[in-house]
Length: 229
Image (tube, rainbow, N blue to C red):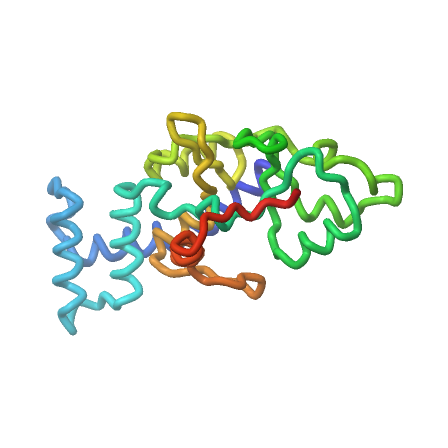
């Protein structure tokens, strides 16, 4: 599993590292050995991108700027807020209705919380539900969720530090908490990759493209925590 995860991360980051190295080499040329601040490098790249003779296109400029700036952002800025996080209480029973709800939600990883608290105890993986036998029905979610590698971090952690946590823990979903132990939301490896690539990765199961904006809209109407009970 860990080898597979590392390979996926390397595959995802190659489009970031390769253009970044190529663009910096082209933009800075003989001055590459000079010490530059991130702000100076961003300005140089933007200047070169505006020139028709630079050979730097808009995609390369976008990815390079994303790679230079993502470490300045905090997890709270890119998280899926708790108001739109689908989660399940640990005492919820496995039923046909629950499995149908999970299917409709389209979530591959579902945070599991101790009943009526902000205390996450594990992650329920949708793929593990495919092979359920008849005797599994009626069991509590608590018996099926995965506790190993559960990541809980401060919601103000920087994205580059969170990336290191993902690599260390060999997992790619983190639950964000404040200093009082209140759950704020989740961040995935995909969220960080989106920040670097500066695009929204939306697959066929995503019902809402920007969950942060959606959360703001529903919160302005009424605070809601989407929680299966």
